[in-house]
Image (tube, rainbow, N blue to C red; front, side):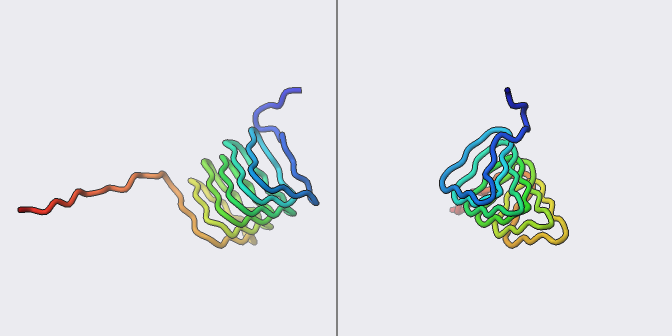
Length: 123
């Protein structure tokens, strides 16, 4: 059976742990422990019992568990009411529900190159 885009195609259940790099397509849900780097252009779901430490680079991230590290999301980050995020976030859209915890910095909006002015000494 073929997966349709957006379907759950990976799951790390409660009581499981993984250390290393994880790269996937479509949607992945983590309810266990993960330590390392996660990369996807699609969606990562962090369940209530999940504990993630490391770097996440994804299209969309929905967080109900705990994340410590760095988050880069191309589309959006959602921190649900049970979510705890101790991380710097870089995303164009951030949604934080009442009751969620977010400690860190957030950079939002379009990335624009810095303007550099050439300062030449006048003779």
